Amino acid sequence: MLALAILVVIMAALLLSGAALTVPIAGAFLFIGAFAFFFAAGVHIAAALGALGLLFGFLYLDRPFWNFLGEMVWGPSTNFVLVAVPLFILMGEIMLRAGLSDRLYRCLALWTGRLPGGLLHTNVVASGVFSAISGSSVATAATMGSVALPHFARSNYSPRWVLGSLAAGGALGNLIPPGITFILYGLITETSVGALYKAAIGPSLLVVTLFLLIIAIHGIRSPQRMETPPSWKEKIHSLLDLVPTIILIVLVLGSIYAGWATPTESAALGVVGALVIALISRRLDMKMINESAIATSHVTAMVGLILFGAYVLNYVLTHLGVPRAASEMFKDLPMEPWVVMLLIMGFYIAMGTFMEGLSMIIATTPVIFPIVMALGYDPVWFGIVVTMAVEIALISPPDGTVLYVLQGMRKDRGSLGDVFAGVMPFLLVYILAMVLLLVFPQIALYIPELLK
Image 1 (tube, rainbow, N blue to C red):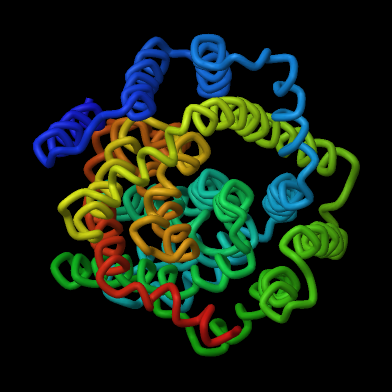
Image 2 (cartoon, rainbow, N blue to C red):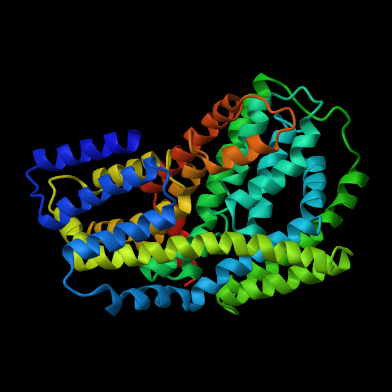
């Protein structure tokens, strides 16, 4: 358990630095230990969070549960911002069934297939473009995997690099707006979701560029390109397949950046646009709508249960004074703020090896956020850092959700080790991008400041 080892190191550093472990801080470490036990026992994350909230509330609070439990569950469920989550999920589900992903991949393959690394570039670029209309890493990985894997079935491409590039592309799903993680982070920390979307542009371009660079280096060492170069006529004609995607991106993100619509309103516009595109593509029928609605309800229910459990737990921890005590303790440590931030980044990366990304952000942000603010960091910048940590969690062995999604889609059912090995170069590059964001925060903050 790498995460627990890091926590032990952090606790030892606190003791050696002379920090006093107050009752709230001791309670926080007790909570972490109990949470690790629940997780190792296989308890669902929503049930674990809710049960821990009830347990700690029963042990430490004098106020009866029935005086606050209903309010804690009702509050987030009626928040207008949260409505964007099921709408963005529904939009991605409709576009998946409308065949947009196939057309997108075929077009980009003609333009990137002759670069060093060949179709591996297409995996990343197509995933990045699809991320701009899906908002979900798992949905992006599943969609692009279903489209791309048949292209490589009879090729000489390394299976490890194929799977690694698809996993890396899937990891862009939450980082590239309109990522769902930004909505949840904004809801929990009361940070502008629109500002988070603007701040994500720079880091998204950085991560995509690093991914393409490492693929190009691999392509130079092991030449792999399309055997028959397409004509310019074919390439120009293929751009028609991009039109629906571009229209949807402009409709959703353009309305947000222009200030014409909130993220929730733009999500509704996106659903309407997706339905129109599906109708024009002659894919719209009651069966497709029903399947999209069912898939959306499953994901929304999962996120909702996790959010409700986390809110109950966060209420208890806040009334125990855990966030305030932790922020004061870290603020008084004889360490530079960037050292503490490196520890926080390491904590998130370690947790990602065994914990699902959305669960991680909902469970930890209320405690970590006050510490980061006490250190003087920008809340928008930290939102990008947390989102990148969530993406790293999704492609981190042994529990990266995206990795198992891709493994389940392989028809040859090869070794899971291929997926783990293939994603490692991209995982290290993603961590490098996080470090660069710490050193150069303007990568995220320049565009929001420019568009004020």
